[in-house]
Image 1 (tube, rainbow, N blue to C red):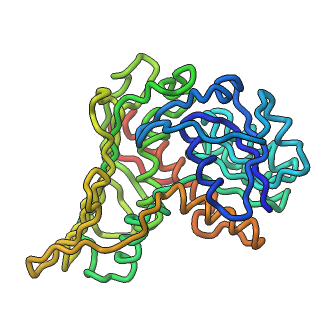
Image 2: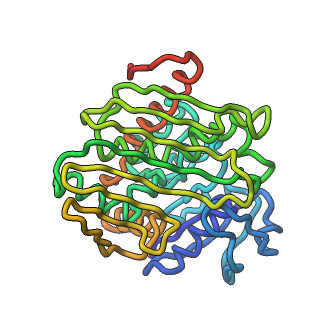
Length: 342
């Protein structure tokens, strides 16, 4: 039995809790939140995909306002961090030093130095560390990655990724809208597509970025970004991300990838999310798992812990690279010039 201590019980923490309930031989033993009474009352914040949903059954689960009670509990195997980004490194290092495996929500941290602290603690502890880059595990994205790697439809000519959200007004104390705490839309939202681009197309050697900053508040930082990436692929690769849209705007997660022999199209808002438009005038809808990337990433991580395997499908070293590329984009925005990878 893998026992989990869950830190943070907003939208993402509640989603993780429900997933763990459906995994065999996994038990959430305790939940930490800065407002434990909120957890007990069932006041779960919504997010940009779905909402808080119904109150999960917390019978027999310890709810505490002290994270150390779970981190230092020797009966707990895994600490799952769904806390604000600016505390990721501090809490992850404490948990790894205490001998716990750590799953931490993305982004890994706010800067590469904090990422290095987490990697160092992982190495010293011998425990697993994984960052929640769920898009790698989202069934439609995973299937598309397989198609591209197999060159099923030839080489990629162009790839456009889009991730647009209503303003995240649901975060506790509005921490998401404070760039110094969240990294803004660049690090919190857009980084999903950065990580996927790295995973599929290889190392990013340079970026050209354009942005709208402080449109939501005077502290929100980059609220919208459009970036072109130079990678190992000759394809034109562009990603668009932003959260300066109004409450009634539906969350948009999509891509359009043109290959030599077909165009691959994904839109999370459609009933048939993934389409392959072929050169013969046909449109096919490949079958895929109905699971979410959150389901698949947590199942994978738990299996790694149970089987004593390293995290190979989403290693934290690559999560650090995603942070580095996001900061390259920030520098390109600041200077108005293309930035190359150091």
